[in-house]
Length: 413
Image (cartoon, rainbow, N blue to C red; front, top):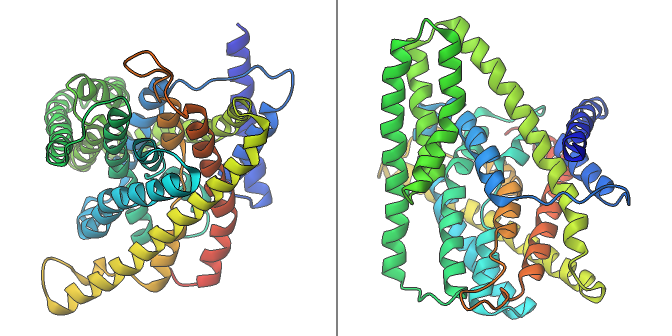
């Protein structure tokens, strides 16, 4: 009963703080994370340990489904080059960049360095959109940020699996890893596509029974994720494909009333989940800091700051290259680059600065195995979790506070 009381109190605090953030013009992710940290240090507050499996099942499917459902498919297709560059190419580039810093500055072994790199490679558009929702960000920029978040979690999770396997003693062979990555992505696409088609037939048959329609729409993201993971393919990609499929179906089949009511239901669910995510991130920090020897706390915070800065610089450099490459391809009339896919300097800067880390990075860090196959402790586990948590906090609070100022300063975006 005590746990239920705590959860209800946290939810009530989250709702109240979201209203306060709106009144004082402060990005609500920043306020919720800060409040979570403060609550976590209250002596009477019992520790709340996040279960990574619960995070992935409870939070990831509905948030991914909602983003995929609402994204404009034509705009997604127009910007697929930039989205793919950020969600796949940049994820692996960032993994390697952070791994180099972790090896030469932090002093981790190469396998452990790549584990840390994979944990922090994916950005969290939930945080970015939460910060910018009242700043009239352009539809073009929002599409790229949301499109990136639909795919980059899958890329980071694949990189993470391979890195952890290397730590636990499995041999890493590049061509096998590449084939497994393609298999996971393609398998997730097939699962999402097939379930989307089946759900489409069911929804057409029961479209006049609105309660059944809503129930199916609410249930299927979770069911699709579980089915894909049981088949050892990407549950993230499966849910994204499902969301895109049902979005296109809804435009053709559902009456306007059903669209509006389902939109209201999903808005409430996403609002509660988003707010809970940020306050839980803050609550986790006091637990993580207690696992680190006092003399290591400030050095690890320094390492986290260096990694945060490096990840930001890598993202900025890649966005500059992407803007130039798009311009050249458009001028040469090569490929399918249209004028709508081009990026301005302002858009490149905003997308670069919006690369915040969030709940996925924290969840996969906490999901590190406690022991290796031989029963020995997983090396440097607490240090990796602590550094990852601090990087998440640095990006949400630091970039979250400055991103609105940057957007206003740049003007046109």
